[in-house]
Image (tube, rainbow, N blue to C red; front, side):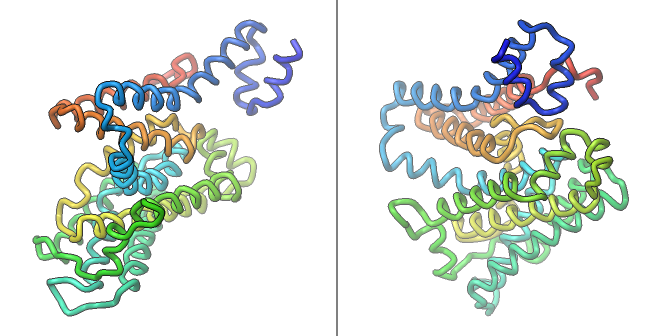
Length: 346
């Protein structure tokens, strides 16, 4: 009984309200199930690594592990921004549009083969600023015009993609600035600099979620918008700040993408949205909002990246890889939803 009381004290208000009417045994079962769900992504990641290593020992070679880390850099940075939006209970489909704009600004302002510009790292600052402004714009459109986030961000996605293609003239423009290319080519302690940038983005996201008022308010809104508003939280301001924060991370990812590929073109962001959403959901962040976080997303990114790398090592067809990823996201959503509490499915 003492254990049950201690468990109840550590629960959130909503969880306590759900659990109080139940008997002691049912409460323990519910707590155990919730604890299992929180550890499930880590268990899946470890199991994947073991199984792939058994099937192909080359997986654990240092060279391949570095390749996995490098492949995870852009998805991790994108997923950090998307996590905050999903924690709100919203969705951001502007990922690919924002990334395209950031990559385009980086390439066109730095040394390239299409114009005489050579602004160096100012191009990186301008790219991240442009993507951040797109995020703030999305938040303003969504909150003040009261447009569902799905539609507002879908529109911004196509606007960003259209601007990018128009500015690039419909062709690929090569990035020739050596200092920016070093983000992909230069290594620090054996890892590409892009990996360290992605890790710094993760640390920044952790600070925002766990140590700032904005992070607490995002979780509060995702857990219950009506209760958050009654608590004095400015819903509009928090939403706009969250979308702006997401835009910042999308901008960093755009710069990394341009540095890794050495160019910007119309298809530089293709598939990035699906990969980011998959990573966030597989990591255990609930699409209904208020549950999960950036640490969960880190695990989700590693699961998606390790699985993709493993299937490549095993010679699995790219079409089968897409099928596996689709099944994985369906399974993750099914496991993350509490269908006993979910009265209506829209």
